[in-house]
Image (cartoon, rainbow, N blue to C red; front, side, top):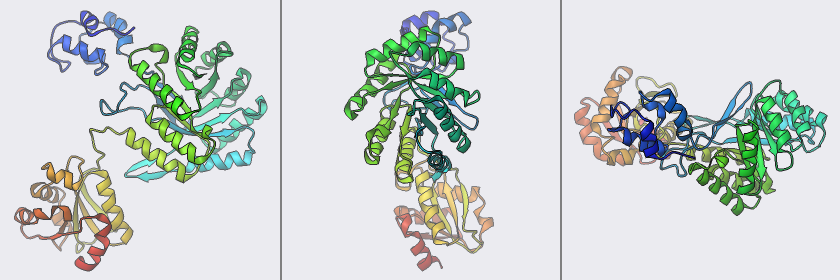
Length: 446
């Protein structure tokens, strides 16, 4: 049972040293009870108190890691229900499922394509995280052969799916000491599956159709010494699944330890790619730690991975690029200088349009604290002084002999002030939208 702030306070040194960043030990203990700080922030807490406070200080959702030779996927460790309270930490792993009844050539083709999938999205690499191999055949040799086929085509982490402990054991032998997730513990087989997970030191997936059944199973499995669990609420209807996933997160955050584990969702159970996409999006948002797709196609995977990046980005901290001067299409000293902010989407919109046009330019990215052009201007973070400072800081004078600088059209009002800040420079006002830059550069700057 979680401790209250007052109970935690009684175990702290009560020196009010302020080294933790709070004015009193009581204030720190209240934050610790709310899971908003770490126990290690207190430099004087005793080892005895650390042991007593370990359960209260631990995140309400256990961290579970799937490990392979080339990669690992960490899920769990979340501490809030809504991302605006505090950002979500561990992005859900997105995996592709293959069946051991599929032809080996088909498995190889699907896995190789998924393994090679990579997209650059505003400076971030979007990739899949692994594969789930399901023992549909019921045969240990066939299952092990399918796992070996997957492993030859990819080194990403695996989930082994079967409710037969003998098949899971055969699959583990094919993986040579890796730490996959074994999924298939239920009310009928939990003892054998727990023994297998404990012996192999792997995470264990627990399947049931209700909160009560899941909680009962996790407590039994914990009693056998298996700590790393993943919950699989087996409801197929979207509304029921949404309710279960949300209730599991809510109860976990209230420190109901039997449900304090990451969850897994099989979006491929939707039956067709359109519904699969909807189920996967729902699972990413509410609140699956692992999302398994049956279909691999770029048009299905891309929006899911983009959604994941958006959900698991700190909403209070915009995605930024490094302020600098960027060379696009090998510019010469006679080529123009463009200016924008360091908000990633703004930067990549401008850079991609100019690069795609084949026109050379110098792109000065000013530090606007990750805000877009209009937002930064309205907040006083993108003005003539900041632009001039960036031009001087990055030595643009020394790079060009034609001193022409182009302002974004939305901040044309800054042109007069920028002339005063940068004497000797010709200030031009460009278009409002990045898509119009190539035509502007061809008609006005060349």
